[in-house]
Length: 284
Ligand code: SAH
Image (cartoon, rainbow, N blue to C red; front, side, top):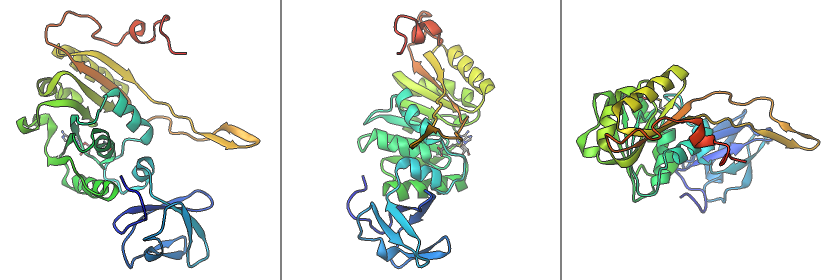
């Protein structure tokens, strides 16, 4: 993980008094134009993060390394990214663990890829399929910029609807952020280890219904569950202590399913209210 003094090649986040954020990529000898003033990268390189710098226009900025969430929101995008509020939930719903072998499709801008890479760690493996060459290139640049290297990632220009490549199997987890995941349920069932997890990230209800029905129809998936994450930021500035006026109201639904043995008698194959939120063990 990045630590110590700021180095060339790293991203840095500059934040002004009104909390506006500017992401820069530190390079020796370079300058960035910020709000009509210039910032010399050489003045930042070799400094500890958490300090401030002043532009040639006299404006002061706080300088930190971006967190994953900050980087994802500011980095160049090809495709729409998975929002930070959903990244954490995806890692838990798909139970992505250190050492896991994970397949992702599509790579998009690489936001989810970075979260997966961090979660699997150096002993794991993330294979990511993307059909669009231009998106794959943006993703690769984002990933190497933020993580320093793309290890242990394998990026492939491949259409997952045409199948999962044998060299990428077996898989512990599959995460799909693309429009028609139901076209992948059969190959996913063959590629996943027993007990493995498939997770689909989908923006609309008809897609969730179709994916759920396709997962159940294979007979190879159980415990199909859908959740959405609502995150409401708060303003803590006494006496104004209240929810923020604006929030991200909708992004996507998370539908996860467990690879079970084919022919397993129908126990809890679908999500039911009783299983998850029954009175006896309802969350407090
Ligand atoms: N999760 C990504 C965003 C993915 S957007 C992120 O967080 O940045 C969906 C991506 O899936 C797009 O880039 C699209 O080109 C890609 N895609 C769509 N269909 C695909 C397919 N059949 N195989 C591989 N990639 C696909």
